[in-house]
Length: 138
Image: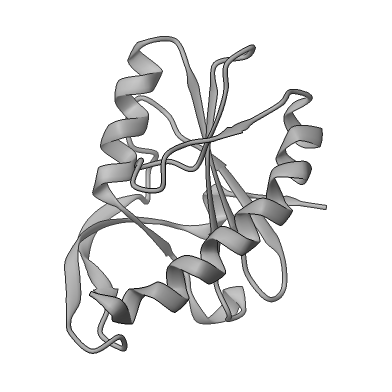
């Protein structure tokens, strides 16, 4: 489906810029995972996974923030194996961070979400994480 190509290209471009920031935040060297891996990066020396999202809107327009159930399920499997999992969202006004836990934090919920602006409906079940559960990274 060619309509996704510009989004994938933009996402990959941002990930390449962002990897330096997470290397510094976590004091380790992350490696990029396969394009179709549920999460973006892995640091083998510290067993840390990271997912990076960039959105072109301010946080006042999107609270809570959605993330695919597949990413939560994959992350929780990795937590069972002793890893930590971090999600980052770059919005227009801040960089938000959430460390995934083995169980849902109060306020997280599953609902319908996705987008329908790329030529077809891409709606599915997603997790919603309130911004109040996140840290702002400076």
